[in-house]
Length: 261
Ligand code: FPP
Image: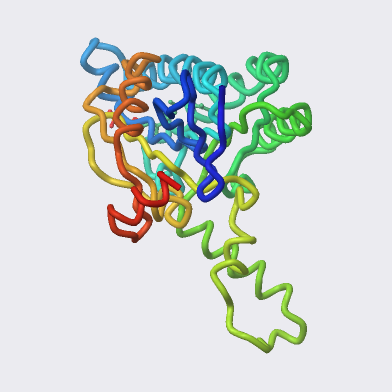
């Protein structure tokens, strides 16, 4: 049985009268460590991305089964263009083949796919594959899968500011810009904020990912390299998350009092 906590859209998985674990509504993942994993196997870095794609597929399926509402995967940051040309080219091809190959399965599994980021810099073939997959899955009501590609948190905030400005008549502000106004122009503004951000590969950074949407996320850093991050590893992250107390600026006592209401 699932119950939605009204304040923050977190979902309790109920196995008895008391909530036994808290499932995040929105999980965001920085899939780091593909290159190192491949090198450790004596393979080329790009082979790590290929296996990373398989892991991404497993994790999407697992999150869908668990009832997670939104999963955002960081596939390519606005800073990743500075990687060697061969690696960038490989990743672009991987995205096209991945989208083409997986979109039917995603659709069959009721997944709604969205690509977030400045896709205008991608070549026409990739842009077409993105539009086709998004169109096919647009009305699906299962998990929302956001693939962040040529995405940066700063880019998102800047594009939101520019959209807001473009909507202001005569470009003169009658009233101050509010948090809500800005937020409504960010990508995925109809989705819950990130509850749990996971980064694999041992690094402890946010790397310009979902800066606004992660303002109050719980952070989970795994030493596992992304190709090793399987369903069991995700379950361990979820288990740790369910034991954290999310305070949103309140005191521990206030949170406990609210929970017993
Ligand atoms: C970071 O590892 C990973 C990337 C920049 C690419 C991530 C892409 C995939 C996992 C493919 C899946 C794609 C989709 C569309 C879901 P790294 O190369 O920085 O690893 P390193 O730290 O070991 O060098």
